[in-house]
Length: 314
Image (cartoon, rainbow, N blue to C red; front, side, top):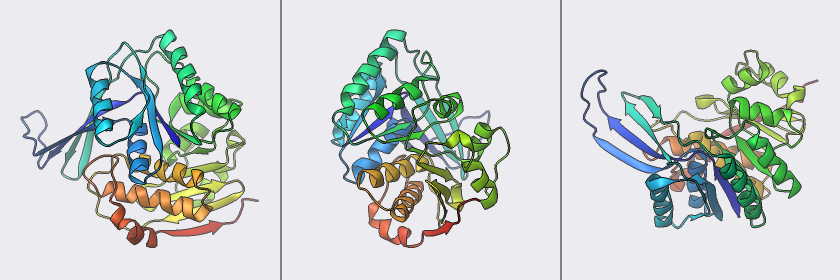
């Protein structure tokens, strides 16, 4: 079983608007409401892959209940830790081929709630083979929290796929406990290394070889429509994906994370992991609903996904 963590979940609301007008009334053509937050997107895709998965994190209030009820409707297991604050809404306005997001801050977590979840988390680890941790930390939780969680995973010998950014990621990189996989984009890499990183192969190879990433088995860099660049141990890979018709790109990175952790628990080879992960990202982008894939098209698009092995940086 895979444990998928969302520390700051939400109810995701997507508004489809044909012509968006600022400072005016806009009529919504279609509305979608789903349990949201990066980790719950990961959870949904894992469930569609028929992977045994349990969702966890912090929820509270009526919106927290909505998340549990919606997961129940699709037979997704969950074991959330209840807090006194209210779970947030996150709104995406899809208009004219663009996407405008309005994200609520979410609840403030107490010290007792933060400590209580760590105990809950450690108990859940006894039931799972791997962990995916995705998204931001809510207010009230220290930026070292993910580092603490990864340390607990390391003690229990559970591989961890981490998808976060900012100070929380920096604290993990500075800490002694290391995740198995991280999935930054070039902007996040630039923030980590405090220098501009482009999608140039030599630039990426040099970046991923920096000492700050020592101890991390896999680094998978998202390059959007250009695919991905990855480092596994001492080998570099460039993944090229075909051009697709994008309907809703929200959750594509989370679908990629689902593919990575699924490949890990099934002991898949490097090429299988990278092609699977990127194909799921493409499939998500072609759907209206966030964190959904049409697996009927999986074989078609994985066939168009190309993988080139690059030499180790000398």
